[in-house]
Length: 133
Image (cartoon, rainbow, N blue to C red):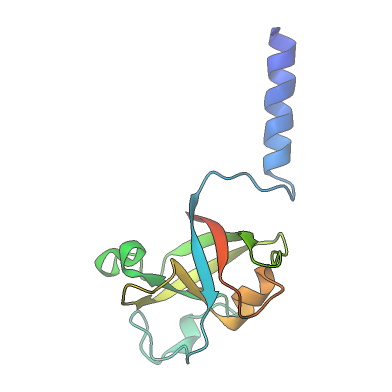
């Protein structure tokens, strides 16, 4: 490959990554919609003024939670797949506000607003790509 071809391929790759096409540089996991009340949370108690205006908040499993060190962290999340092709092909940013304890927890439990921004099927369990910001 010539230097010009390498530069062209590199530029094309960067362009594709910053447009609507997703590049899987994050980690993979699962997500479901959180149907419980969002407060109180482990991170903020009953204070919802910390929540983003779009209400894109998430509860994470204990592996991601890491003893509470992920409290208040933000993640980019994208739907990859699920039964009946639920993905909207959007990338959202969520704020971690709580932990899901137990062996049946998905990687992320997303708020209604966050989940419906990336999935067309509300009750679905979806595969996701996520990366911490």
